[in-house]
Length: 183
Image (cartoon, rainbow, N blue to C red; front, side):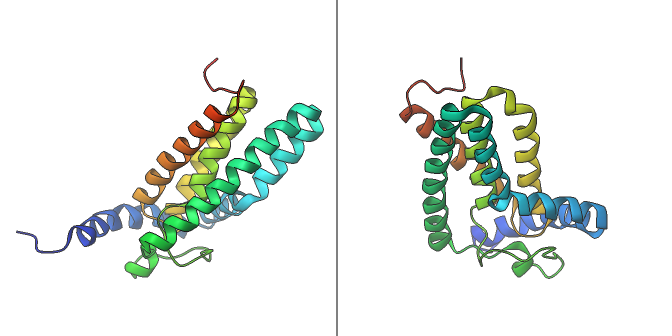
């Protein structure tokens, strides 16, 4: 019978997944790709997207950008609250075999703020501009994967952030009349 507390058993189980993903960072080309995607996911990509929407589509682009910005403010507040509440150590801090290929933005891992924002922003942006799906879906998937590859998050941090970001986007879309992913 395993006498480790549930939390420690879950972390130990995820460490194997983290270690396998983290080994992708040993190759310079993989590490460079995921580090760049992660950096873009810090906000650079989303700010550029909002500016591009305004330039390309005027008032409608501004409306979409304001929707994205409002969703982002709520996502940031929720993310910070959850980080302070859960205080889950990052994988590289819990397992010396896992390398942090880039510096973390803060101390704790749950949830992945990059993933939470990427999912929420992508869903809201695609509701306004479905044609952006070809760009946003692969970018968001890359951001999510980067967090595990770079040794900064457990897969469950990314999965939970995906659920939270999707839920936040759903509520945001429900609150804004005339904007939907479905139709």
